[in-house]
Length: 444
Image: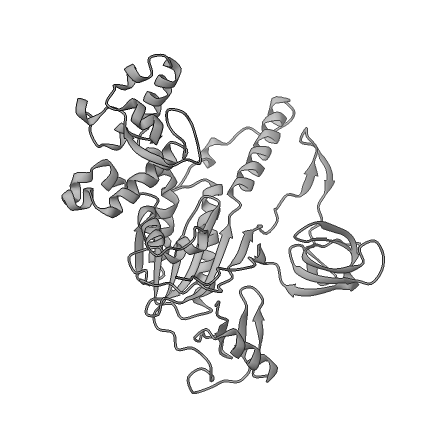
């Protein structure tokens, strides 16, 4: 079961406590709610002794990260007991950033093409620093660092584990570097299979069937001198694999020349693509090292190996629990309800709204807060009458008129008076929901 974070009156992190003890502290007036997301309590009085009765003495809490292109899994685990203290899934907004930059670039380009009065381009200010990353990728790193630092302030963490690379590229490209045991080991099979599945789109290379069991296939058969290198491997369904047998690829696909060219070209795609995806992970690794905590690294193949051998379901936060060699033999994930976090940003600095031609049609106001509310705040609105009668909970769009819009999980409620709103959580660039259901108990 997910624990509740607890800090003392000086906001120093204490051991997380059971939700039952959190309710007891709140009802007795010994603590108050500090943050709604993640749910955190603060003690009202300074104590000289260890945490209050009921606080769990957690040893060696570890934060684990499974970075992804769109969603990142976050988990805090207890190395000694295997208990999952906290779990979350962070959804990035890199695709939205790229879309906004493309739109801005299109407006500027069309404005320049009209040959209207415009300053000359200054090329001297277009230098990129070493290690530069596109804003869409940079936002992923900043989102993860924000949450790592936030969790460090809420609970005692002694180590960090992260999935550094999607695949162990050295082991795949040069399997002999660690000897025969590493090359033919169980983990190597997971690394290689995960890479091939992603490379070939989880479909048979010959018939393009999906959602069927796939086998690793040698494009040039070993009986005819083919090697085990990754550029000679693909995935195929069992019927196609048996039909091809030891035939040469050109002979097997002599009646399908287009497919033959496609497979030959796709097989030569280097491992550079996976390395580019891993570039953000290396930048994140450098920032995490600066925090002064020991950082353990793992690969995607190792993560899947840990998850499959423990019989756990496939989700982002469960993958985070299985990152690294420090994963306990038994993970207690029953009843854990992950927090779904979606990056929303902090607005923009645009001074005016433009039409499709790039002309400003109206200006934006500099004032952010209206009637004590700011766009992005989580509120609970109680509407007593009218079209939207009822209780609505979601992110608010604050307006100077006092008529707010509230974006709930299912719809958008418009024209709600600020008098009907009650604050829940101040805007911090993220929206939050709880993933209902959790993981049911595992029965033998």
